[in-house]
Structure formats: structure tokens, C-alpha cells
Length: 429
Image (tube, rainbow, N blue to C red; front, side, top):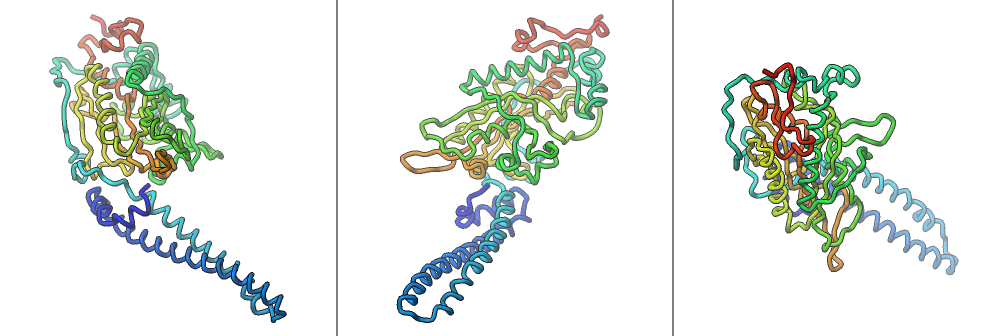
């Protein structure tokens, strides 16, 4: 959420950012916010004047009693004041709700380096790693492959839970765990603290982490409870210091968590989205950093480099995308995606996102740091270390062999008890 003061003082920049984000319909909201803010200030002054008048009338009543003057007109006037104050406060509350509606929907400031573009087609490729392999045989889609290997039961998952839920078996379950364990080890070696966070958050907290109005169709609500299942560990991690004041000398605070994630959206239909690429439940290693505002640009590059090193170690070809203004999420000031190469689909697809939210989340969650008596909101950044479901599909496509076996990336072999291949007798020759 943006600061009201910054909206008053920086209307021109915010309107330009909305144009760049292709959200011109929200430009009029800025004028409405300024109007409501002025109304709120006027009402506040009216209430203060009435309270001051009430105090003066109390003194006048005391003096009138001493002088034995007629108290009736003074008492009638004093009696009317509480009702007038109540009416003003009701108007203020109504204005506050309107302001809150607009404020949580106005996106973050764009970093000055963000490329301008209307949609994902104008995202900028800034670097690539690895050569796209030439494959001399027809790759099987990952669903067909692992079902024939006997390593997943998609039908059973749909039967007991619905589409988007799966049973992973034997070596595929091991591969999922290997990615989780390797991901945690990798991020811990880079100075992060491991956290086991809550998997459910109340509405007030979740609204600080995301724009819930835009996210409610994605997140699962717990029936008859003020609780939502987290769509990502980011939601719990960024809320960990809600309503707290941190010390400047403790920054940056780097935390990571491995959790299941729950999301309603499933994406497109088809054989390649039936299986692991898009699921309602999947596992993810997430990174979150709280830092000083002066350091967040540097921290963003550092977090991105960590994840790039992770995917380089898996030897999966990928490219890094800088997200353009029109495709950038509302909370982000700047964002990078890693898109891994999926040879069967003959395209790059997103596997991680790394973004700087500056003080946008911290403001709504009321997270500050203190230095020499001064308090300021921290900057918060988040980054996916690895979402295991998508990483597994990338491995199944990039490491698939002609005989139907799957090589295991070298760095994961120790987490799979020394196995170098996933083999099925059906595919062995």
C-alpha cells in the first residue's frame, strides 16, 4: 500500500506509473483519493473544533452557575455537540473505508529501470544460460512418462481430491523430496534462517501480504473460520514481523521456508497441464528478505543470483526475464522471472519469480525499523528458490533418455540415495 502523504506529494509520478502499467482507469482514483483526503481533514477539524467548543461550554456552565445566570441555552447547546461529533465520525469512517478501498488497489511505484510494455509479450530477456539441446527422439510428455513408469497416480488424486491433486510414488516422490532438501540446503548456505511458518493466515494478515480482492479466487478459504490456506510461504514469511519495530542493526533479516502451497487456479487444459506443471497443491522453497530501503535494489540482484546458481547447478537451460510495466504485479516495484527450457513443449516457461516490493507490504503490515529514535518502514523482497512441481517437469523433459529412463541431475543424486537414473522395465531395451 502506498503512503497517503506520498500520493498527495507525488501525484504526477503515480499517474505516469499507472499509464505504464496499462491501468489508466485507476488514474481518476488518485483525484478521488485527494478529494476524500481533503474531506477527511476538514471533518477532523470540525470534530476538533466541536470538542474545543464543548470544553469552553463546560467552563461557561461553571461560570454561569457561580453568577446564577440562566443555564438552559448553554446546556442545550452543549447537549447537541456529542451527536454532531458522532455524525462527523460516521462520515469519517465512511470516507476511511473508501480511501482504504482505493489505497490497497493502487499499485506500487515502478522502479525507474523497469522496461515499459503492455503485457508479457514485451518482457525483456536479459540473459541466458545453457544451450538448448538437440534431441534426436520424440520426447514423451511427463504425464505419460511417469504414469508408464508407475511413479504417479493422477486418477487416484482426482478421485479423492479433484483435478490438480496427485499421488507421487517411489522415485518421483524421492525426486520431489530431493529438490526440497537441496533447495533448503542451497539457500541456507547463502545465509538464510530456516522457518517453519503457519500454513493458514487470518484475513487481516493476508490482506497485508496480497491484494485479497484480486487473490480471493486463487486462495482457499477455511469454512466458518477467519483463516485462509497460504498460496505460498511468502504470505506467512512477510507477515512474521507484523506490527513490530525492528532494529536497524539487525537488517537485513533473511528467512526461508519449505511449505506446501495451495492455489485454486489450475491454468489451461491439455495433457501437459494435467500433471505436475500446474497443481492445486505443490511444494516450494521460498526466500524473503527484510532490509533497509537503501539496500533493496542490491538485495534483489543478490537473491536473483542465488536462484540462478541453483538452476545452473541442475544444468537446466534457462533465461532471465525482466518483467515489463504492464505485466508487473501490483505489489512489485521490479521483478525478474527465470524461465526454464522445456524441450518437449519447445519453449521457455516460468519456474521462479524474484521481486522487490519496497515498503508496499511493510506499510500495510506495519513493519518498521528504528534508528536513533527515527522509525521507517522496511523494504521486503521475495523470491522462489524452487517450486518442485515445475522443476520436476523441467528435469523429466531435459533429462529424459531415448529408452524412457530419466537421468538424475548430479547435484540431486546424494538426496536420492546415490541413484543416477530412474528406470522402468517397460522402457528398458
